Length: 375
Image (cartoon, rainbow, N blue to C red):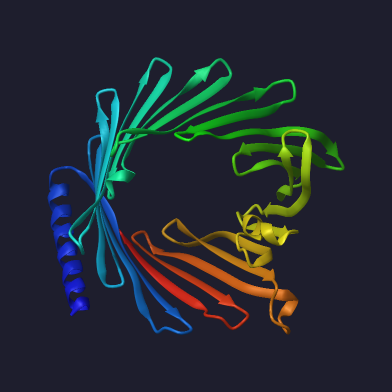
């Protein structure tokens, strides 16, 4: 019965969308959108409809309005509306979200931004359920000579109280041809964090076609005190753009007491003239697997990705990745996981996306197919 109701709702929305599109085009408005559904199959489950999404967009002059509906597990769980456009010198945005299944309000966010001389001002009001999550945030940003600054203050609405404020300054270090940035954050509990970064400091250049660039960050907070250097080896080769050696120094009381020093990863990327990119990453510390390879269970990854020309000058894409880690005996070269995705643009208004993940340890594999229709 639930499936029948969901199908009826989807059909009704599609019919209303088609009628809206016809009326909008007759009025000279621009119209677009998409319909998307994902079908998934796993080792332990048969074919199921994972989610359905419907989007409609109407443009009226400089204003844009959109409506989004999403379904998951046969439930109509999200309905949202969005509008944006200028009102004189002020750019306005507004979004409203509901849960249709429970007929309940989820959130409303509105924003206004404008420029006063060289100062950019943005104000965001967010009302949510529960009310204690609601806030208002104002951001001021601009430049003073070579120095760029951005300050944000956020206050809670229910009840009205101060939440947090932050200030960031950034600019060039001309003497060493590097970039500096510093951010400080305060909350209602007091000092929260201080972060200092330096990027692009050249240690040496043109040594056997290699250049060494040092990026560093210093983080001082209640929970963490760390100095994290990243050494990037940039080859002057035709295909390899960047190789990075990742390191970290942890301190107990900055800047004199060093707690530990660690070189924890190596990341490199090479791009061919046809747009195909090869990426490799190797973690030298199990605790850093997630930040280096993107997967906490694997210490090494090789990935190939690139464009996939298909039809109507609208190129698709592909990506294949192999992860290596602690695997059961008999696994080839400690290969633990294979992931692949293919985005095929069959026409200017239709695309199919195939995604799959196959763990070699015999755990649950998954394959999904997403169908997208654009208009």
